[in-house]
Length: 426
Image (cartoon, rainbow, N blue to C red; front, side, top):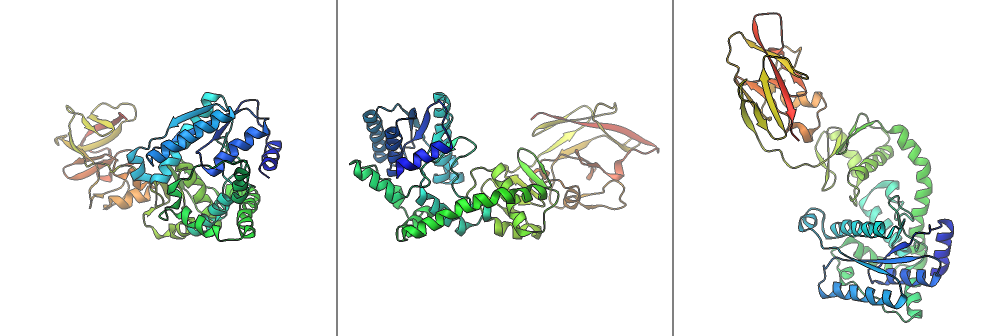
């Protein structure tokens, strides 16, 4: 069964002359994949093992097993250190941090070997587990596509049509006892609980659940055209601003998921159904550990901007985080003109916003909350605290890069004119 599945996969997706990198943890699935590919004999192989050192002697035992297996098969092996960054673990959790490091090391091995593809041993039960988890945590039809046979980054899964029972039978027939990862028994992880549930399910149930992924992928090719037509966004490397959102709930969910994946490819288990229903609430919404939604913008969560407050005069530029601000009476490229009462001392403060700030926008007869001005001008919430404010005598003269105050605009009357410039340093 395994040999037939591999032949079908590689007949449909012929490998190039370059070697195929096979990710081998030492567990049942990856051990079977390596042996079956070796038995096939038609593809040049390079085995790759990433040791995360998470389970002490047990992890080292996995590495030793893989080294021995590759030596007996005559398959070249590359071993990579997959030690996790403690900060990444705190931020994303052990599973996500390990997945990121593992994929990074595997791609390094792929590039060094001159390979096109990395084969991983995901199989039909893994697919069923993934579908159940995504039904539990949300994500809509796009998420129900499950584990893809071929990913754009070159990761392929040639065993998705093979069940765990068939893999275990394959190894038993060769007298091979693979390694067992003790962490797979830890019920704190959702996948382990789902795996335990599926062990009690019939083979037909596993088959039917896994089949949902193929059905969703077929439907998605049609549905994605509707998503493209509904998309009305402005994108940067760190954010997506939605100029408009479709009224249809499913299209909203699909658009959100598309840009969540763009901004945070490692995001998992996002409940886009709940998220899409909350978008009109006006509240800041946490989307993932890396992303948040606020007032029409999906953006990466940045470090809080510290308060700054610096004096500015024609003789003394103001240095603030990321910029130097200067003021004088000679116009320069991109300078902002303003005026003070005749003879007034040009002594300013440059600071970021504070609670209760008010500002009189250009053309308005009265002040309004600065927060409301920034919302009206569609300034993303994540950048508002970093915007320099030019303040004179307690009044906000200029919101840098946004607007000059009505009180300080240049007019024909008696006044002293100044020019302010912002020079970015980072």
